[in-house]
Image (cartoon, rainbow, N blue to C red; front, top):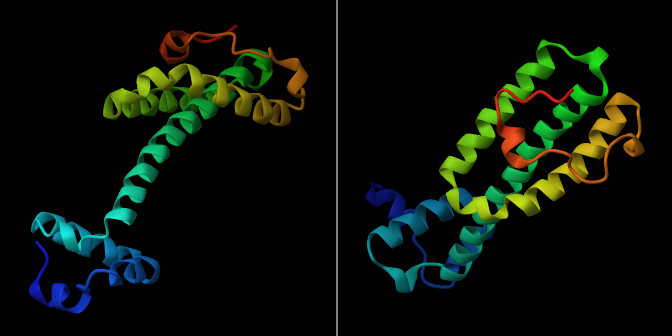
Length: 159
């Protein structure tokens, strides 16, 4: 719970919330949390709160794509540059599989978004793998050759 000095110092009349939002985001978040906990909804900066909540949702979706892109990059490199296979690539695949599974466990409503995320992540992975392997993007299939289940399967190592 926030102390009274903080509330006196940072609490602002309606309209000033937006100014605090621009000036000191951390203080704004603390103030808004306190206002919401106290049930003082009329004083809360609802427009910016809604925007921040929507932004958090987009961030979770971006994280899904980002983790999947890293995983796919390493799987592509594993498949198309076998001479480079090593413990760091193996570790990256294992870690990203775990983090991706954890992210989906924490955000199960992202599961219906997997096909779109896979498409975006594969597009990015082809660019990175093409550059890092020096094989170029044309060396890889245009569409992801693996199912999402294969990608997450700890026993799947493309040959």
